Length: 231
Image (cartoon, rainbow, N blue to C red; front, side, top):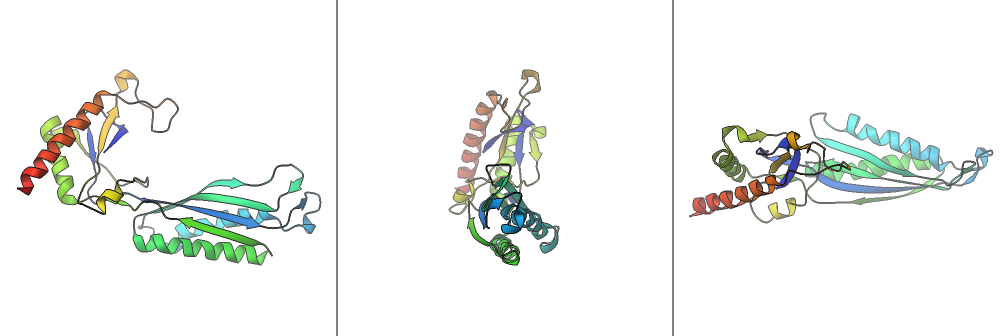
């Protein structure tokens, strides 16, 4: 489970089937030829090449993949240069790719490297490309999710259950789902009366600690219900 600030305390968020994406990361180094900013004709401009790479990578999402297939490709770092009048010899680009479909997950890095290779070769530069696979997507088992839903209604009332949409965040709980049936769910931790309203990763983020008790109750009750069903 995960305490969830978008949900009020007393609410349980569930998703049937795909819930959270596979969080993979990539690293690209563009290797050009540095030089003085006043003499760009004597360089192989790694920044200009890197900018083209960043722009063209977005064609994967918008033009290579069915619009109904979830895919995120975000460039989150672009590091180059140390002086205002010097064109650097290298650019480092990093980011994340999020997918649910395993075939798409394995295909995206091939498309990415093809784009990087084509652009760098066109400008006489070279490159390094690395793609690191993270955890698999979280895909909940319906039969376990159903027990979570029933438990929440019994403990907290009929209005306690919030059926949510999948999101493109990642979660290592997927490793457990490779070994046994399970279901990941959210425990609401927001409380406007206490001023607990800030989103995750916000500098003023906090939780309503009363939600911890609800989480424990959910775990115990759902476990007992699952064990009773197994008998």
